[in-house]
Length: 78
Image 1 (cartoon, rainbow, N blue to C red):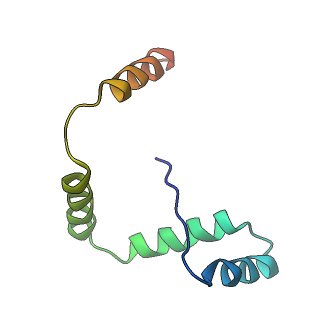
Image 2: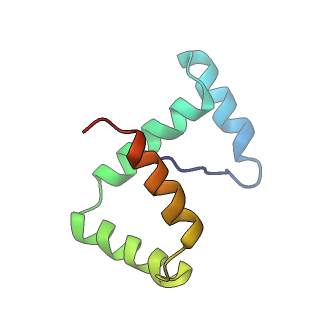
């Protein structure tokens, strides 16, 4: 699953300065930070957070996503 994030305020400059000495991209640094954050949470906390997102976004079927998903799955070798 791919996600996109943004760092508000003055933090993007701090992230860039942190990434440079490590020769990492900001995206790589974000990935490491996200993995560490998720590792500190229990599975129940993660499930509860995902449920809150689902409740906000809704759980209605999306015809566009269904069509796209079907096309992707048709291309996968089973």
